[in-house]
Length: 367
Image (cartoon, rainbow, N blue to C red):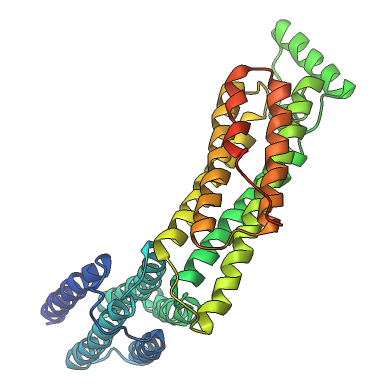
């Protein structure tokens, strides 16, 4: 009897899951701009209903095992609500660019995934009175749904907000790399002595303990020559100046938020998306720069990264001018970056890098 009930529950759950997955696939497609946009507040409200449905599932397992009919009715109500949040979130993505669409998709996916896990856990726990551990996981699964629904309140609701947050995340990553660069140190006499002892020990065929190996690992990046340290310092300046340019971009985005709240003119989502992409691609090159500074330094890779950073400034200026967002402070930040690039070009002493600065020569500081 219990086996038949389990098979029936599995079949019903499978049907609900397949329907929900088909609906969720709609979120991969941007709705037509002619459709009426749904307010994200409606998504949050129906998210609260999902939380309540999850709570009801949890309550079914606080006492005796529920009747199969009760559990089936509960699942049907739950999936109806889940369908509602999927449809509303799709409607809320009218006019959304790739970044905002990704945020909406990610938030709703958390709700869907946690709900699937809860209902699958509920069906698996049905009739397993002897398996107390399995039933004890239900409250944890309910809590996961609550957290996912609560996170809907933190989801950005406009393109500007979504792009601004993504740009700040890129800046944070750049700051992390900058911090690591500043921690690089020149070789000391102590580290040189330890390296000599290490070589001598290996020559004698003696093994080194794991603890000794760890000590050498900790000194990674502390054995740069004076020449390598100079490149580190100059590269650190470039990363710092690049961050200053990104900060001016974020300042511009912040201004757009106020403009957007006041309904002051349309904002080009395509241009903002391009600015974000430039920023993120630069972050990748900053990451590459950080990796190249450890000895032996990879000069050829450093040149490629610098060229990308140069291109970033040039293209960013073009986009900002198109958006009427070019400011004197942005121009000053680019001028400082140009100066830092020239210094590293001189230090590297190779003509291949000489084409970096001319790309920035058209940057003009507005008066």
